[in-house]
Image (cartoon, rainbow, N blue to C red; front, top):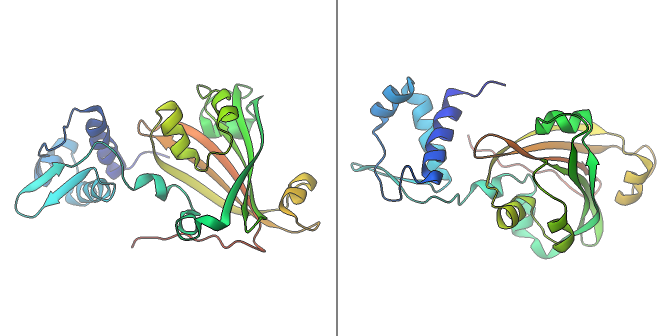
Length: 236
């Protein structure tokens, strides 16, 4: 899918802030100047600035202009998780258990998501999430080839992948694309989720991107809907 004009403006300004080309405290060009710079109308410029402000990167001051506030995202990480609402409100009821960490050849669908050649060795992580000690989500995660498996063995009980990538590898994630559908799990997946034969699950496939727009992670979630409700908050 081609990058929208709003995405291009947001991505370019965010990269300049992260790289230091635009420094904390520096005043950004006016909206009209940005329109000329990017050959854009007012709407995509304002939407890009709104997103940067929501992420805590800029501060828009009435009558004064727009200024770089921080080089670090304050909100984007939590928005990457469709289950963030429950984590934030009921953390004591949620736990994570790792099942396996391996290096495996990327299947065609994984390779397509990570934009690599099929068969390329990638770190593969299988985990389950529990609520009140009941399995609610089984998920498999594949990482781009430059993410080795060793740190996952050393820190097996980490909770959030986005935070782990930032802390262990210095990789900062910006956004994610998701696809949801229904699926019938395999026998092993049913066992891990404690489901009867023929029970359907919600399948979530999510690709997470870094600030350069490169895919970093491909997740596949299977959600036990007998226990879990998939909740997403949408700004309108």
